[in-house]
Length: 415
Image (cartoon, rainbow, N blue to C red; front, side, top):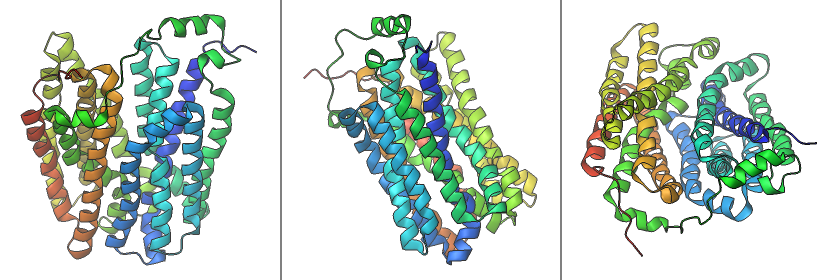
């Protein structure tokens, strides 16, 4: 049986794998108010558990691409999803901080492979003009997962317990895995692809792909360090809201689990809107014939200037206003992030963008790891107040570093 436009069914599976990826990683942060009390975990112990995930996640961003190249897209993504799904289910058996941290580390080893495998699938199954759309679809899956996780997990908590929540959210990936292993093959090997679609895809494959560039050579360019440090200073803000927001709302603002389920998804929805807004703004400037790097930078600084609003959070009595400020901050962060991520495609040759993405993602994970530990230490010994003040200055700092180091497209040195 031939399936017309089968590549769009594959795109749907790539979207769903990213949704599940974010639901699984967020389950812990949503059950944290209840889990930390039941297991007697301090804020610092909770930060260590989060860092177990982040350390593994950061290192595997560098290693998962190698596994995708070695195993192929079908086997690699299947292995990653199966690994992280089972790892998430194992959280249900944790009885102390060490066990929970170990299962969290296992989760972090599997999750980054989703994005490396998706990038390869996009290069295998889509024409050049379709690839940006499918890549955007995959990124949208992250926001959708972050939006649906709070109400879904709180619903499971209401009728079951936190251990069951891990089992059920983890099992979602195993159902996805069955569909993926049945559907995905390379176009030329696929029994269900139509002749028309196969001809379209083969006509758009490059005849002579560019030679690979060793990723270590990219570290010799100041632009690489500008992007890496830009993510190092700015991305920890996102990790805070992803992993600490439900616990902050419960501990400091007195939110019940039902209120968290009803309201905690709003900052992730505004983050999704921000990612679109940031791209539209800089894209409109490019269409007006602005130089591309100048357009992206102009699309970044207004949102960097919004981030100091977080300083007001500790001094605001109204829960509604606090949640509104958080929504503005997550909106601004994702508008910023869309542009700094797009710059990699703007100033680097296409054939090195994958290698560069792994390097820059390392800066993302390293900054998130250090800041998560710092958050746990400060919250345990002082309060959340200092964290919101520090976060207010992180994007302006990142912008200054970025503008100092990233001034023009790179010119790769000939070997």
